Image (cartoon, rainbow, N blue to C red; front, side):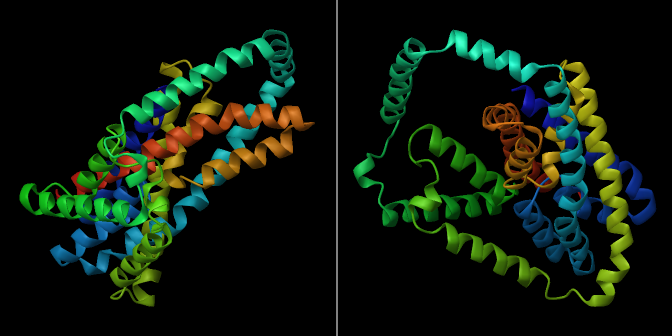
Length: 317
């Protein structure tokens, strides 16, 4: 929960700072065009680009496109440096040695035998929530349910004005909670690759009006938007980390996951554990220390909050 709060604080302040600083310089439409994708990834870009096209601002589509392409170049190096310093700090303080000794003395075969039934109970309870039995969770049925939920999301978009991305996100979360959709439903429906290809086609189609001249003209405004956004996200992550009594070296990268998401958050944890850990045990402990909050923060920012923020902001133009 702390990871989510820090991540949300970062993107909220980053988005607000973009609107405050960029609007007097480039205009409100340009600020909104850049703010949505800064807070997230591909889906936020698609929502922004579609709305800009509807409003006749095709010349501004290059801004979210460049933000989407360049944001990881800003976020990943900063997050890497901070997490590396955090891992080195723990390493120098003997945190991993102490944790390792505690683990060896407090966990053993007895502890493992007590954990196993709980894991089984959790699995059983999840099966109890499944409204659709596993024997019916075949690719054609899952694909049909995904199609129905996407169609319903599009219908509610036209009915309520709230973007279909938000409705689809709500249907996915609620459907998984009540057992309609299994974990990784797209993969189990054998349609994940097709979905990614379709997203790429949508992105390429939205860039049909972009010219080389517009890319050159928008480059420095995009760099300015990213600089302001990264500053706001970092300040928000720092303030939330201090307020929630987390080490800022660990908290600020959680907010910065808005700029790269998965698999960047996983890969940076893996790289730091390999370079800082002196042996396999330390590498595993460093990885375990970093990966869970980073993945949770990435889901909260790129997968969830960015869709909501982009949907709300784009309606204000």
